Image 1 (cartoon, rainbow, N blue to C red):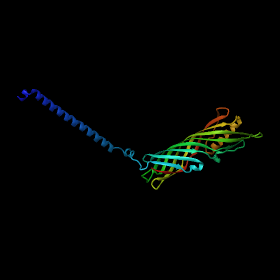
Image 2 (spheres, one colour):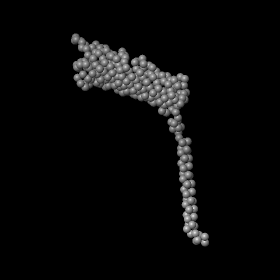
Image 3 (cartoon, rainbow, N blue to C red):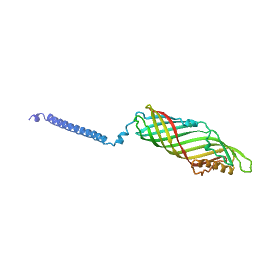
Image 4 (cartoon, rainbow, N blue to C red):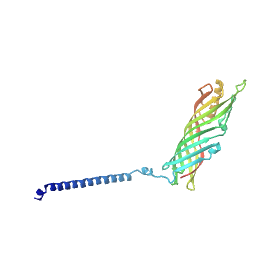
Length: 277
């Protein structure tokens, strides 16, 4: 009887109660879904393999700038920056600048037909590398024995004076401006020692690589086929000292400019001092 006198109010209350009931039901359903998702994520985090959780950990000191003190003996300023990117794994980039200095005797060759006097050498090098530290007692920074792979790109320039003498003939004198471009890859073994928590001494004692070289010579005058052959023999004699194949040949770009490519085994070593932060 009450509802018949307040029919509109009755229906309004009934609809409002139903809407409120539906609202609470949807809210409870939403909260249940949210907490279920959070719980599932937490469970997944706890089930992650150890190696994935370790990926998020860091050394106390991840950065090690260095200077290669052995390179200074060869008039070469060589700087490195090493960065920890994963437990036991680091990446680094090195840059070297050579401003002067005579070539070593091992790069010189004098035979009966050709004698060469190489001038000062200048240029730069870039060396990216990756290391894996095998085992270490240090927890603050990468240290101990390591193995790795490295890449080398460099460009060096020099000038050379030649004396070419064929038997029973007058000697000829000529010179050239030479440039050598290298692109190589190698492996390395070494040991990084920590002193007083942050100072490091990096002993790189084994670093063979194989490089692809391009040698370009621009002579100060036209050269004969015989002179060209003797220059090639000179370069090949140096290559063979290092165990190379000795199949270098020069191709003519102009009457005075020649270039040739070759494979060449080489070696890397050094002692670097660093400071971790």
